[in-house]
Length: 318
Image (cartoon, rainbow, N blue to C red; front, side, top):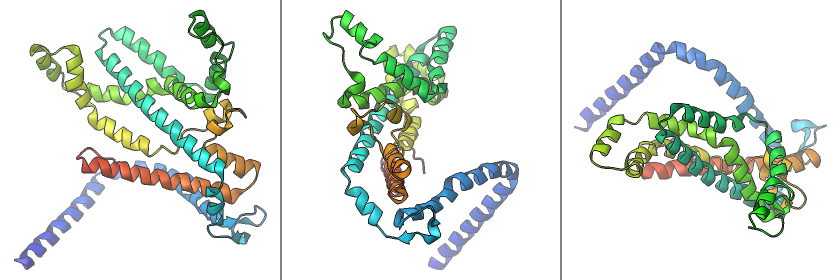
């Protein structure tokens, strides 16, 4: 019996292999179209990983990788002994979590509201207005934020006129408010763009489900709760896994442009730390070590989130 089962398994394996080969041959045009993107990824995403060697060297640009002294894990030990690096890790994770929660909640909420709107013209106007900030340069966005959140800016004037505060709030100089400012700015810039995928997922929901729910007496809130939200659950899980993989990337432009000496303890992320030590102080090995740490943690978070989703029988990325 064992011999028969082994033969059947081998036959099934061969059929699966040759079936895959036939499928690839039948899709050779698509494979050919994917080659330029594959080359692009290999050149710009994988070939630079050769530079990771500098994290284990006392790298000197004049000597190059071949001539620089190998120091093992010295750069990593120095890195984790620095209070400002640990602080930058804390800031990165803090701002990433805020961006993830606020971005996900607001994008789903906006997508649901737009899905419930029946006036097509109004819906298109709202979509256009909310999409446009995505295409603005971050320099422009930060400049607008500096004007809005300034001590004599419109937000402080509004709060004072409404008698909600007696004195202007120093938004741009208060470190404890910096993370939330970054979250608000990111939501304003990206909320419209992030709703696109959720709206697309909602359009795939069978309209007969809504009709049947209406006939059974379900109100709008119950239709959203029992039809719309379960209908976008798989999309939400996939996007959540992908976003968890980006938790070590809180951003660079906002923190670098909006931060100051007053908020340095709260605004410096890993990317700003890498720029500071890699470019300004020319400690290339330390900067590369920080980048490797960020990449490794991101990969671990991605696989952990994917594994948890798989154990819960949810849709997974891998």
